[in-house]
Image (cartoon, rainbow, N blue to C red; front, side, top):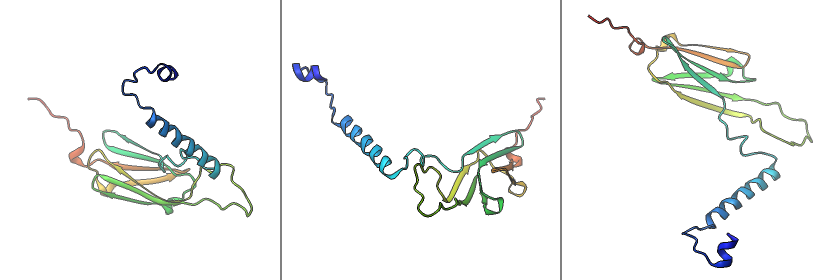
Length: 151
């Protein structure tokens, strides 16, 4: 860049103004994070973390919900969607405590999961053990694979 400016070489329509604005924004974000003690990346994740798997008979959803009791969850199935809702509570710090890092947040959450196919609503089962919610969603009969005999 210094050579281009010194010798007045063509820039081939290169405009550094947008990259400079982008750099300025990153620097401002870092400054804000330093002042507030929080990080933008800490809140960027989605809570709870969810895995969706499938076998020949059912879909299974496993969600990480540390510190949340089973009776505090609201699980709803509608068509091909499953909703998990609840509230994460975190104990308050003592008076006069100062945060050096704060990545755990409290508050209400709601996750919607789209299912790959229809399920049998009457046979859905859910269990919560050691902070892991497991929901078994049996496939509807029309969604199960069928063996077709060739004649």
